[in-house]
Image (tube, rainbow, N blue to C red; front, side):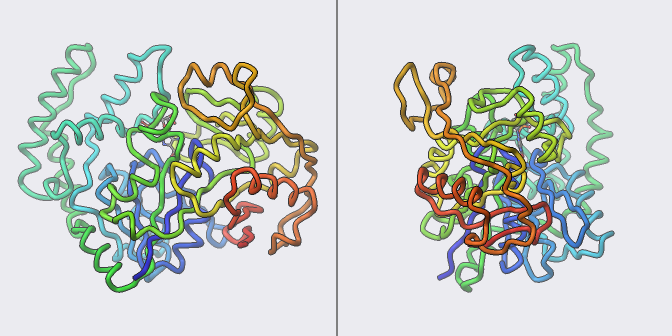
Amino acid sequence: MSKVNVVLGSFFGDEGKGKIIDYLSTNADVSIRCSGGNNAGHTIKVNGEKFAFHLIPSGILSPNTKALIGNGVVVDPKVLIEEINSLEQHGYSTKNLFISNKAHVIMPYHIELDKLLEENRGSAKIGTTARGIGPAYCDKYERSGIRMEDFITSNFRELALRNIENKNKIFKSFNYPTLDANKIIEEYEEYAKILAPYVKDTINIIHKSLDNNETILCEGAQATLLDIDFGTYPYVTSSNPTIGGVCTGTGIGAKDIGEVYGVLKAYSSKVGEGPFLTEQDNEIGNTIRELGHEYGTTTKRPRRCGWLDLVALKYACRINGLTGLAINHVDTIGKLDKIQLCVAYNHKGKISMDFSTNPTYISNCTPVYEEFDGNFGDLSNIKTKEDLPENAKKYLERIEEIVQVPIKFIGTGSDRNDMIIC
Ligand code: IMP
């Protein structure tokens, strides 16, 4: 029986999962997105051309790979249609794209609610991507959400009407502009016609692929510290981008999971609010941001930057059962003279690897750093770990030694070929 390989984000997202996913999906029969929505953004460079995927699994770029949007994903139909059109304009077929009939639809009232709720949080704002993700998951769990299987049938009108009427009551109570139900329904019925041929029971497709011993890849979105349960709540997204979300968002059982790769950068970055212990809100952080082009794919926001935190990484290894690490931007960090690596936390004088997302605990911790020499030089033509410069090897070996998970991929540049496979 084949096993499902999984790629997950280890920190706050934007670790460069797209590149590893792109490499692994080239050989996959099936690639699946399992959670989140168009709050995610994977950028892949193919032959110098840049592709930003928000919803469609990047496996779609391989002509024989089935690309599945799993039941755990929340789908903005407008964004998905734009992505389909853009792929086709670039000469890529979407005949192998399948959307789960159980995936939920993001409607305009979700987007408006996301903005309204965020505005009302005042100084306690989360910094959401304003794509309606949280409100769409709220409706899913409140059981008023619209699944793809209803979206593409005559059930849609009644469900949408009821929801828009209810949401308009909320908008009115906040003196926020209400929505025109008929206009929205007419517009979305057109989207439903376009998407209907793609809607399938993806759970069956996956189970058949497993029976046929096919290679399956799960493309994680967001990351461990953005997980609704395991992340830095409330500064998190509304789904489980950790290993559990792979099972609930696809219909794959735990025993079918094989390799679980955790993607990270040789430094850390974060968008939005919330604790970030190794943040460098100073010249060093600014330098890392510019060297690593750390601006959001989805929102274009400048990312907060800092040193790599191995205490948090060890936590991600445990939560997800990581079997291998993929570390990106080794070339970027190597442009600095000196690099700091957080190897423990000092909590009120006690030094340990104890991680907690509890805000009081974090606010009482200071990072314990080890210093490494940078100046790695040009890594662009290096194809084996052994050929890396000594300074780079020392840094990477220390990471493996502390978290006890082997590094399987080393990112040495932005192109899909700039990668050492260990
Ligand atoms: P939401 O997912 O739009 O509700 O946003 C909640 C938090 O998760 C915000 O801090 C976002 O910036 C963050 N977030 C959501 N998706 C991503 C992602 O793909 N990468 C990085 N941060 C994300």
